[in-house]
Length: 468
Ligand code: CTP
Image: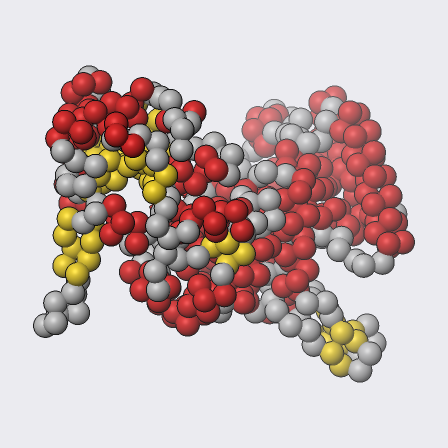
């Protein structure tokens, strides 16, 4: 290989120089090499060296007058150079003694180290030593796999996955991100070893799930998780969506298939990770609310309410944030039927006003989710829904311009009512405040101080309250 642009930053030559002077070999390995061939941006550099990585990092740090973070327990060191994060590690190999099943980890060659990595496409390395600077070292056919779009382990997949079972999900994540296929032997090994995922922490698993979710077509990842048997172990609620029940002529759709379609539809429209999570979870309570009515067929009454209640437990178990991101997902799940009900029925001003009020600034996200939720195979039906949605959107715009409901704060506060009538916090104050809000949402009065004040006076008089 000629000296390619990816190694043109001065730091690469410098690492090679330091390694040469110390009689060590140094290579760039892993994601940076892979991503160069895939034309993906990457600023995380992994450098593997024979012998100590920490010592080379320290010397480089001195030469560049920059700070080096050393992680002695892991034998790694990290520094920033030329706008990149460069991590150093010593090449390792594992050997087994007859009297113990526990491997001894000791210094190894580059190839020993490459063999211990997760996938062939992640085991590609470029030399940094002056004598062969920029040469690709690829003993496990990583370039072939990159060209053929294949995820494959460098050695026996059972060994690779038992070294770190998270790699099973990583493989699925790479397949999803890159649109690659998992080679059959590697795939079979994931199925075989799936139970081992139980020893992996939720934090590590969810990092991979987020990367699957952020991919162009996240459904690929969830289908693969399902086919390998991992889904049932890491996400039983999602697995339960699978299947179709039929009684007589009534069959409901497969909610797993539907959910993945909605997820891909949202992903095609929005990069918002949390809206994608809302799509994944929007029907999560369908199995729990499923009922059969001989006249109307299958029903899932209240699945949006129960679904939004299930969100915190799922987030907690997956170690996802229990903050406003979770609340957003809950809100989307809770409201996901509202625009469609609106579009099905007659689109009244007051229904639109209420929806704007409840969704607030998240109204656009809700509309995106709702439009994505229409997965019917019948073109005429889809067309009709989309037309109705266009009407809802138009009405929303008109009402928002007129009434500014979206960030609606009732013009009369509880404090003002208490002050005007000399009241302590009590039931009447709450009632008057709520009645004013309802009157505005129903369009009885405008979203306007004077009209709201007049209504307050009327409501207070009805209750026999006197101004102080
Ligand atoms: N690696 C591995 N097994 C793991 C994690 C990582 O063998 N469980 C190796 C792979 O060679 C990988 C490198 O360590 O290329 C760096 O890992 P990481 O930074 O997690 O992933 P990247 O491959 O860089 O990909 P991404 O940045 O997309 O996570």
